[in-house]
Image (cartoon, rainbow, N blue to C red; front, side, top):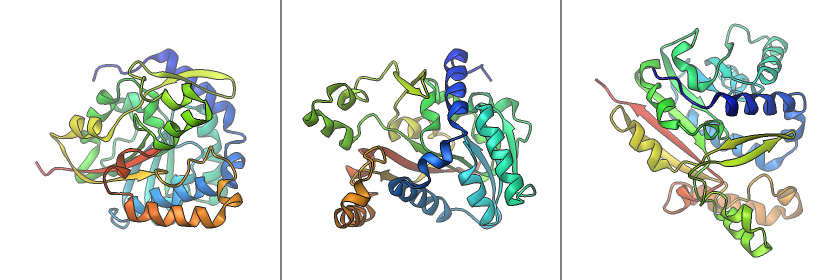
Length: 275
């Protein structure tokens, strides 16, 4: 496989998320909308996943999802490029006594051809826009099929090129934020803990086109299309009745046009074709 990605950008993003690893869980533990997003994503995965599945997780962070799926009886190989995140994940595995269910590897998703544990897997899973940190997602996606069993599945949570909530920020005078996804073909600058790196935005059609020869689409859901994004802090607590109403609307419309395409994220699942 051709080497993928910009090493400088990868190094910067690894440094940024390593810095955040110590406080990452505490920052998001009390965020109602983050909890809502995790519940939605996990429910989406579990509706397709067979009992006792073997999962490869990309950009696994501190291991919140790895531990959840382990507790459901699945086995997870959790990978991440950020040493701080991997250290925190390993600590949590030990504390939870899940060493027999969760393994960890310091590995970028741009280097899956060098994986120590090559499966094959029942599911490749990537949450919360980790894959938006590469400008060569096509090459990453091309590495998936050999790692999966026949009829294996891919579930990705990705930032699209348009977000309704972000676009509405134009009415607050936040023109740069409102337009950043629409003018992002060369990537946009992001920062975490004072470290800057680039990220890119991808619509579902991009992923479908890259994987069409080997995969069929199982489903696409918009996430935080009608429910506000989690960076609108305190919304659920300030407006509980409106929040419940918006949740109900999103649950009903999440897979419909145009709502599945214009959220803060979308969830896409594909299944490997039989040869």
